[in-house]
Length: 166
Image (cartoon, rainbow, N blue to C red; front, side, top):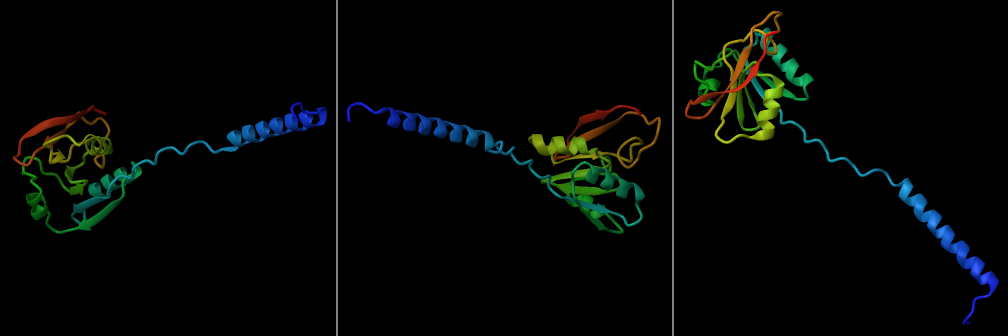
């Protein structure tokens, strides 16, 4: 028993080779590791007046950029704005709530995504005061640059983003 005979050696070698072939095939056949799931964006709660076409265009812009929206039409948005700290100086035509933040007016999707990703301390929301030409939903050629304003609950503001003229 100390020495294998020739037949046993050939059988053992064949078994080792077959095992290696099977093991190699299994490693090749394994699917690639799954990529981490992309975290879904939270749904927008949009408050607007029923007749505002630029608000509907902004919602379309946000949906094209991966957001979903629940739109509530209201004849008067002043209570929604007041409850969420939107001052007259920051006011625009629609108010949106998303991820614990207030988005006032025609803020581009890229700025909302950045806000939701970075979650900067102290910011209650973002605003595109008035209805800036060139902002999403207010797409006008030859529009001037415009700014997106960050605001806190005390009413302090700062420039969050500047978008170039188009």
